[in-house]
Length: 259
Image 1: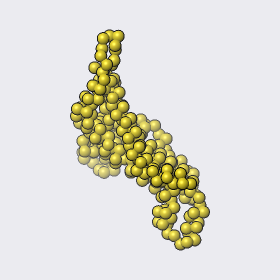
Image 2: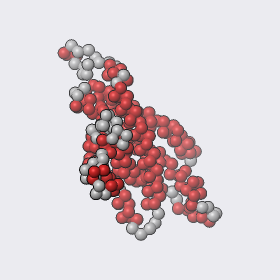
Image 3: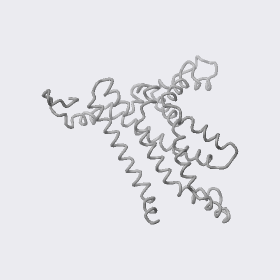
Image 4: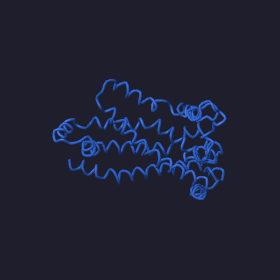
């Protein structure tokens, strides 16, 4: 039963959709795929964002232009960037195959049709697009660090690594935590990339949980079941957010209370 229609004599669905969910092998596979997607893309995006933010925080000629260029992938609509990466990985005229094989078109192949590479291709597209968002958050944190701290460290003879380890990293942790939270939540809700690039295939290897909920709700008309999947995605986001704050943010809150 999908909907509650008491005026038509239908009984309340209760926990039926959730019971079906935990016994649905496709749903469990989608959950596993989503967690792999989050575990791989989120740390890479935050680390790349940190590296880009460190570069963009330096003073050099053309810094404003470089900041604008770095933000272009994030500013491009996800549907557009998804279509771009779909063309890049195309098995007939894609840039990926051209860089590997040149004009030897008989060697071209389709990464998006390979069960072992389709998810990796979507990860690459997601990392390319959203690392700039993490960089923007971390850059804001870096610009809040007083320059006097670095000057004092230079006078004391501290190396660049020691400055980063003992000044930059501790003071930018709130921004890193925020970037990690945002990217984890967004990674759990990825839909556009899968919809445009693979439609969940091949063989459900890119069937992320959010996309599976969409298919159940709108392609199969199982609104209640799709809503149950949406609730699971929300609960996962909430649980991981609390976990991050407990593991990484407790020390930050303690320091804030002391000050």
